[in-house]
Image (cartoon, rainbow, N blue to C red; front, side, top):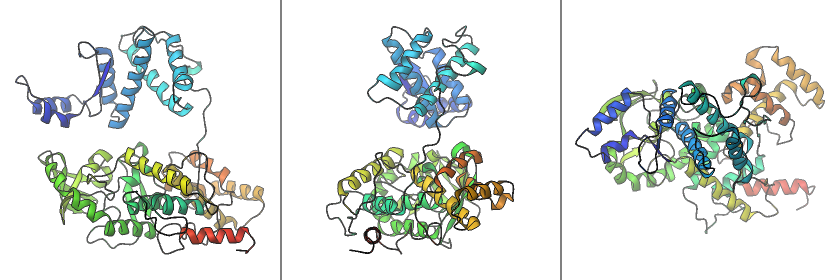
Length: 488
């Protein structure tokens, strides 16, 4: 079985039929609620749709899942069907042993087995698929039994806790300045550095740490949102994130002044050259872009031409897909309205940011010497900067209310008393609101780490972001001096 995905924007380019026009097909998809990313399952020989599975794809589309999730669901079903084909079966005729075989293949026997969290999501897709097939009458019963309380028997047995990993001050500056920024551990410029746009990558890490945002929230920032737009006052920025937030839950994000200054440095020194080189390419793609001609920073609105129609959007309600194609007329021609841009002139995607991080890790490991802070066995993730933000802020707020209380049991007793006190002054709930957690229970898992001696500062993030403080080399030198009792 083959797998394809709906992409309405491709129809105008490639649909060539005398029976129906591309515009009519696009209108029909919209009328039927078939979203971009909806999976379409095709028979390998005839290339005709497979009705039960295509109906499942439409069912997912009407659930209003985003494009990335729709594709992930489709790939999960396609992987299952491929494995079942090797067993002489298929999705509709599978029995419980077939599904158990697939689970064991995914978590044990394939070249790169997946973890419990990834399998949990995949088993959820299976559960949803077979529930749909039974409800629609394609099957009389599910192939796999249900556990107690209707639970999916193939789901992971053990619920794993959050994988919280955080960085020390030295580790962060080494990651940012040496890994992403192209410096040597002695703070000298590395003439052999082959990275591209180090100021952009450093700005990304500063904003991720300084705001505590998830990757999708900070990597999709627009220039007006972070205050790097004509007529904005500058300094720290505050904006509302919603469409790019997890579960679409709206909250206010605060970006400190030093992090904004780091982004401003990228906009002054690197971004113009990227924009200039990509202007001609964007001009050729103009019909596929959202060309903005009016930005209302105070009202959070933008207005422009999209698909030949004048459209107006609330910036906080713009999904990542729309932000990626949003441009405006700049000094060199069309340029992206997003803060971060890559060689093509538009916003870098997930794979691009992943490659920046992987290259930084390789570089850090290669240059590691006696001044290098401890590097964990696993690569740091962008999300680890969010964890670092949460732990630093939670520790700082606790210390304000507790002082330097040495008795850990006393600190825990006092922390529990905060929960019964005023909600505005509770450190746990303050951090929970800042992170956009659905429940304080999620934030509570950070408490087991707040007694780690990360670093002591007069303020929660003094000297972490920006360029006013010491270089990584000076920080490392100071740390070595303290470790040796002042002897150099």
